[in-house]
Image (tube, rainbow, N blue to C red; front, top):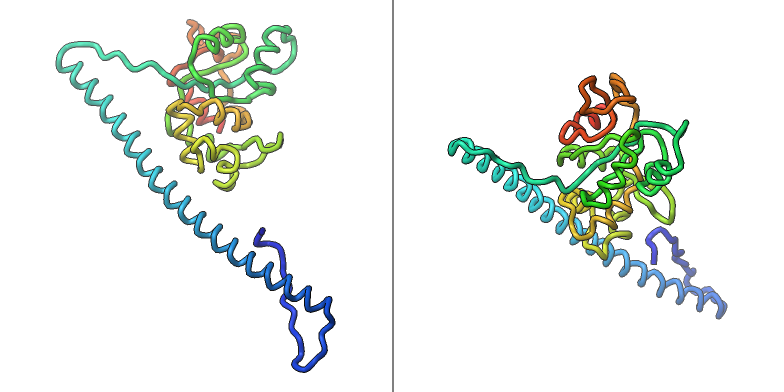
Length: 254
């Protein structure tokens, strides 16, 4: 029983005659109050256990991120000492931002943008790096910019602009319980679980990414350079693959 429901405690004056119906009502209320107290205590215990386990998992995630970062640093140093080149590991995660509106947009790119859930200007989504996604991005390259977000960027986006899809509604992620209700069966019970699943592109990445509503970003501070040209062109522009440079753009748009 929900703790917010009020159950009245009826008092009877000593020696007063109580009708049979009132006695039944008082007995029912006493049972309900007992059930409510038990349910509230169980829910409180469960919440405390869940918060403790989430805290423990968060510490494990932090250690995992630190170990991976130090491992890359050591490998780069070894390669430099040996006079070799270190090939950076391939990125698994993309963040795609739409930079063009709907004016003079042909049907095919419009449909692809719709499939990528980029329906508005400055919308952003997390995507997994695979062949179908890269082929779709080729079709809409002049309308989007994308790159490989860092852990700091993923965390900043989810904490500041994260909204979940709950019964087809855009709900701000103000409580871990919202995530637990929708993704608890996938083992995701809080913000750090969600961030870890997105950043590492875990087995439940699809469900986690679909749960997150497309990010509604602001226009970048300082503006774009030139939307008509690609980021990698000689003139310099905005659309296309920025790789790690996407982090600087997101920082200006977040």
